[in-house]
Every structure is written in C-alpha cells, then in structure tokens.
Length: 255
Image 1 (cartoon, rainbow, N blue to C red):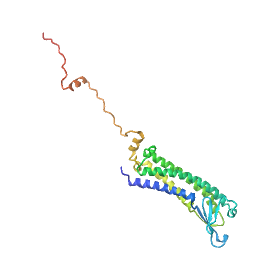
Image 2: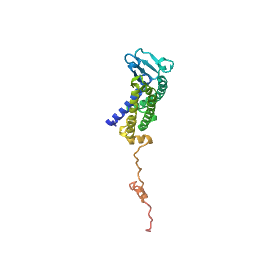
Image 3: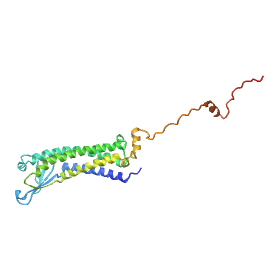
Image 4: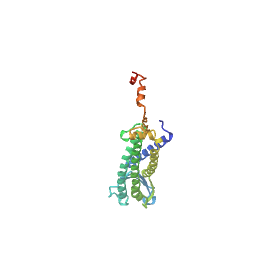
C-alpha cells in the first residue's frame, strides 16, 4: 500500500525535529553556549567579550581559556560566574547525555520503520511508534530541565552582571529552540500513531493489519457452515448411491 502525502510529511517532520535535537546535544557537549560582551567603560578600550562553553570561557582578545573549576583564576575572583557556570554546565552535560541516548535510539527505530524494515520486538507498527513517542517524550523532559537549570545558573549570572553589555545565547538559544521543536514533535508523534493511514513501515496498512499482527490472526471473522438437520437422512443417504442400494425385502403374502 503506497503511503499518502500526509504520512510522508508527518513522518519527515517527526524525524527532522529529532535530528535537530540530536545535533543540539552535540552542540552542548563542545560548542559555544553564550557570547558575553562587556561594557567599554568598564574594561577600557573597545568592548571585549568571552565565548562561554559548558566548562570554560575563552576571551576574544587573547584567546585565553579560563576553566570554571579554577576558582583561583583572576577572572573568577571578580565575579560569581565560575561557580554558577561550573554547576550549571555539569548539570547541563549530564541531562543532555540522557537526552542524547534517548534520541539516538528513537532515531534508529524511526529510520528502520520509515525505510520499510522492521524490528521483530517492535511489531506491529503501532508498537514501534509508541516506543519512538516515549523516547521523544523522555528526551523532551531532559531538554526542559536543561533549559531551566542552565538558564537559572550561568545564563542568569551573565545577564545580571553589571559589567555585561550584551549576552547572546548561541548554543543555549539553540537548546531553547530545540525544546520547542520536541514539544511539537510530541503532537506529531501522537497524530501519527492515532491515524493508521499515516503509519509507515513493513507492518503499516491500516487498523486491520495492526490488529492481525497483534492477535496473530485474521480480523475478519467468518462463521463456519451452519448445521442443517435432515429428517430423512437415511433416504438421502440411499439416494446418494443413485438407487444402487438393495431394495428392502418384501413379505410374500401371496401363497
């Protein structure tokens, strides 16, 4: 059975948003999360900035790397960013690691299903879709906590610092966007699973197909032939031999 345009669009968006969230996890692991620009009148000369990563900061004027765990560094002594960003960064990486695992498994199952293959343990298609939806929901939960925790620690410390002129949420902004992508994906996943016409995969084909695979039989029940009682069974049996049955003996009364 050929898939409908609606099925292709919904499944494409479902996979796409999960891919974007998966890439976002990779960005959190090693990419820039914030770009912080200081006021010119505080540091003197042109505005200077730092690129904030999950566990360190890099200055844009001398490329100096400052680890948040090094509380004795001169930069850390002048503000509380190191403590806030150190705590928030570690929590961020832990939660994004859990989301990364969930999204990796979800994407693998989705790709297998969309390209017409199947995993025996996840048949029928509705069971595969339920697993994908559950893993996406799991990842969405960890994205939500990541946004709250990192936003309330490192990002909050940067925006409340008097010497800071501007904070640009580079990787952190991508994290927030992907959280909303995953919320939309929960709706898309629900719509796909609800409508059998949008199912893709080897087991797709409507409600009856999934029902047959779940029950191991045919969903269309056909009653057996009805029994009819024949009051003249003996006569019918005799007639089936085309009259070859030996006629019954008759009494000889004519003496």
